[in-house]
Amino acid sequence: MAWNSEWRFVDEYPPVTGLMMAIIMLGIIMLPKQYRRYIVLMWASIALPIITYLLNHPDELQTPRGYELIGTFGPASLLLYVVFPFQKSIRKHINKVTGDLRRYELEAGRDYLTDIYNRRGLDLWLGQLNHDDRVAVLLIDVDHFKQINDRHGHSIGDRVLVEVASRLRTIYFEKHTIARWGGEEFAVLLVNPKTNTLPYIGSMFQQALSSLPYKSVGKVTVSIGISNINHHDDFLDLVNQADLALYAAKNNGRNQAVMFNSIHPQLAD
Image (cartoon, rainbow, N blue to C red; front, side, top):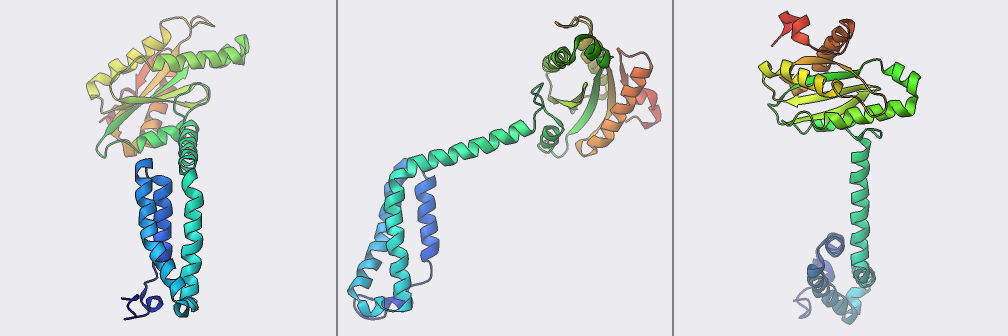
């Protein structure tokens, strides 16, 4: 209708040029290779008729709206021509940046020495649990770890911690996770365990970690405190319970697993 002089194009064309440019550029950068030609054809079908029309109607071109349109579609078409050949490398760079960010996020949530979760990673893991999931917490402390460091050196102490983490990965096969809670202390979170199995699970961890000698130092034992089972939103309360039970295990001579409800039966589930 503009070509037939029924109305002025610059007066009727809606202000959507910027939005179209953004969509086209994102499409070129993000969409797979097989769709690139369709994006380019789409842009050409929009931009070329407008540029041609304005060049053939100088009375409309020489208006603020005309200058805006020609100044937008002209450079945008040139930019499209420049960017198109580099679409593959741009996407490759974006994928690399995205992959690096994901890797950095994962690394930030893991303990650098043992390659298990740290507290930050444990928080992220808790956030992925189902709404109604219940958990129990086991806090595991390496007995007399300071003596290991003093006698054998900190590098050997680090090896012991790495071996503890390695053993922790092989003990329990229901849904759970493990984390380095700090120093020589580890946390194990069991998801939806049965109440009557907790004593056996605690003993299983204690035996698996303490019964066989360690490569660098020989005999090493651990003490374990076991919380009650509660909703995962109560995680910090469960940690406090496990910590009290761990304190009792260490006071009772170490090398044992103690349940919170055995020292506070009135607070048991």
